[in-house]
Structure formats: C-alpha cells, structure tokens
Image (cartoon, rainbow, N blue to C red; front, side, top):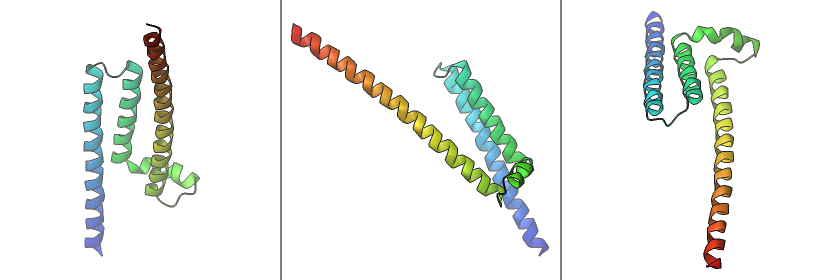
Length: 120
C-alpha cells in the first residue's frame, strides 16, 4: 500500500517536471519568435503570461482546488481538460476568422489585378 502511494507520488512528480520543462521550452520558443520580430510586445506578453501560468499550475496543482470544488468538477484533470477544449475551440474560431479575412483580401487583390490586366 505504501509502495503504491510512493509510485503515484513519483508519477505525479514526473508529470509536473515534464509540464515545467515544457513551459520553460515554450517561454524560450516564444522569446525566439519575439526576437525575430514575429510577435508584437502585446502578443509576447500574453504568451509569456500564459506559459508562466502553465508552469505555476504544473508546479502547484493544489492552487486549482478552490476553483475545482466551487465548480463541482470531480478532478483537477477534468477541469484542465475542459479548459483545454475551450481554449482550443476559441483559438480555432479566431484562426478561422483570420484565414477567412485573408482569403477575402486575396480574392480582392486577384480580382483587381485581373481587371487591370484585362484593360491593357
């Protein structure tokens, strides 16, 4: 029984270490994109905040206890899964709107180029 608890604690610690390392890597990766001027200062700040929050939750999952209990979610992992799906769905919608706007702009540019070419 005690050995099972030790194994479970080591697994959780391993997952926490993996989460912290992932968060640190993503901070570094975000920094590289910022230095290449592919991100604005607002975007950079948002992503750094998100990765630091990710690291804190990975290191101290007990921080989620009040939120999880007040929302009547059974486990923290369920709560994080729900948050992940919400974030991914919102991100996909945002990316879709950006792609759609780019598609409309491209169609307009091609149409204008075709009209100029046909007039010549």
